[in-house]
Length: 98
Image (tube, rainbow, N blue to C red; front, side, top):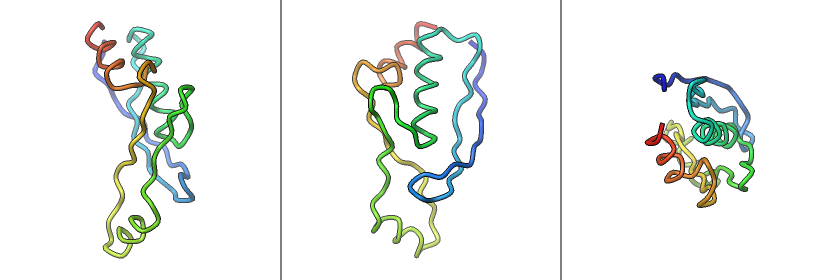
């Protein structure tokens, strides 16, 4: 499997223009790895994974506090189903097997 590169996209998430940095999908990766990364990219861009996972955006108070202090919110977690190809354990196992 080749070394990953990244793609950049500007999308609107929660009404805010957001720069999203996502790993590219290696052409030579096994299908389980490709699917896991593809699903993570969907969620990273503000969409919903087929397992139902979505970004959990910070609350309004956290966003306002960050704005007041000139800070940028850098991440939003997403919880994939335990058997989803994008779940941490499932994707890590697929990558180890690659």
